[in-house]
Amino acid sequence: AQKITQTQPGMFVQEKEAVTLDCTYDTSDQSYGLFWYKQPSSGEMIFLIYQGSYDEQNATEGRYSLNFQKARKSANLVISASQLGDSAMYFCAMREHNNAGNMLTFGGGTRLMVKP
Amino acid sequence: DSGVTQTPKHLITATGQRVTLRCSPRSGDLSVYWYQQSLDQGLQFLIQYYNGEERAKGNILERFSAQQFPDLHSELNLSSLELGDSALYFCASSVGGGTGNTIYFGEGSWLTVV
Image 1 (cartoon, each protein chain N blue to C red):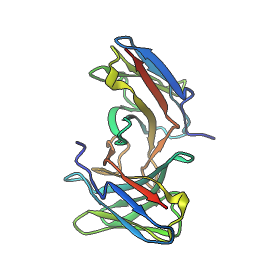
Image 2: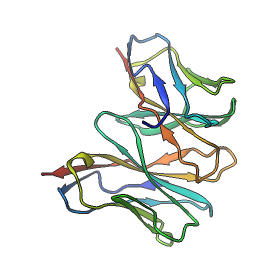
Image 3: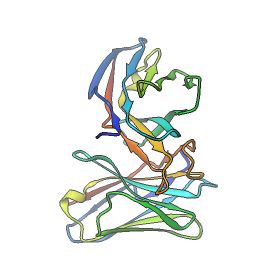
Image 4: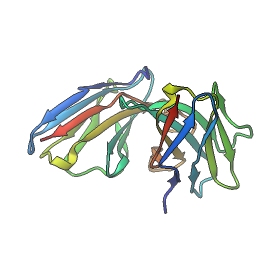
């Protein structure tokens, strides 16, 4: 089974509007971390936001917030007041506590396109 | 700037050749990860090192090898290259192995095999 699922391959949003990018995950661990990364067309992978499995409050970083619903195993990224520079691929990733290592497992990504 | 440095940024080489990708982690980070991103496979974890020792292996081919040196920089060696090895190779680093430690990525090395 897929550990991280991003069901929206591509999305459009009007500039200045908010947008939600979906992410669901699958784990049997109690301790895990959820991350969102942005990859612009230039290729670099930019860290956006982190949510720990034990965090009671949703994480926020500037215009980014993470809508964490633990029972549903979802960790959606909300971008408020979209800007043209937000056009990029967005990846949801999970880091589990694992004796073999603590690597990130990524979803397939969502391509966000912001319309002027 | 994430603080993770990768060289070279772009590399074009022929099939059958060998290349070495280099990575300097963020200052203070002990864990180094290598990822491969290709159009058909997405982002695949290759291998992780922690303070010089191999910690975890992912989908890394036998033709590929890596190591982390005492100064914590890491190298990924790709040999007997095939067309399908063309991809963006990322190095990433984190302070340690905790689930809350953010993993920061370098800008990647674009490898084209012709």
